[in-house]
Image (cartoon, rainbow, N blue to C red; front, top):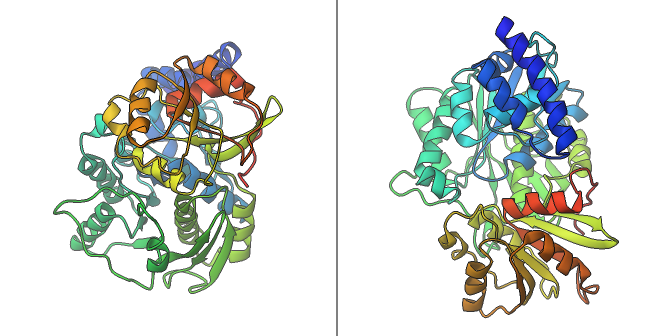
Length: 433
């Protein structure tokens, strides 16, 4: 198709120009250009390989990265959207770098992270062979209005899947989706979850949104792949009865601390078992997970101006809470950036910041709203600097902490501005320890 050829050529030129002007940014612009020139190109590309899709409210990027690492370690020739462009224009920006000039996809498998809404729209054009549904949380309510809307899109993605749907057993919305799929006839569904003994240790649970009147009862299915133990950056995952090596226990190292990363690992392992079938090897999967890292700012540490900093993305109330629950107590140097991407300050209030004893620097457009929230919890704030770049400089100028490492919590806007200011778009990060 001539229009596809033209779109790919112009998109590649646009990408080069954008990266020259703004290194590390502008990833959606080439895809937006391609989308305008050749609508529907994304579906035409993704209909070519075996398509594996990961979607959900939180953990999409990390799970996709883990799954891709496991499959690559098994020798699978694949492409994945590593720059985390999970809507049409972002995915196209990535895909035009791997297709040829006519749009032919030369890899065997595409492992794609997708936004919940765009997963439904994309899979209805290019059905997935395997779809992974992670969770439905109180996330992006300014966009969805209700978790039920996000769940509805995820159900559409599941129905458009030609092979297997892998979903989280603990999430009430996902249990409802599984029940709906089974009600319409035989459905190939695999599940992952968390053992009760682990759930009982989590002060705020896994953060799933309640599903009023839509929930299906949880079944203790022996086919479920379970997180059976979790401590820091280590977890044990028992393989379910459905699939190869049933009952085997994999002791894995996580990219950083966090029960959510243990759950993401279980999801990635179960999806890999589906994709690989009898070729799945537990030792290979353990090795791949041991070498993989999560998406940037999910507990990673970086050496910046000679000082070690841990970064945590406060993406939504549930994901922020999970990170806070795993935070080392007694940290004496914490910075919080509440950026302009927080559309409603009410989103700040469900989070329990009790693990933080003191905030040294508070920044961002919603800094004063955040200060009010912290004041109600009795957490002192030393300094408020609304400008993110100035605030980051002030935080870095503080002396070395007496306990732990310098720790930054930021919303997505704060993350982008911090990364640009510190030139971290190409920096190597390390696992938190």
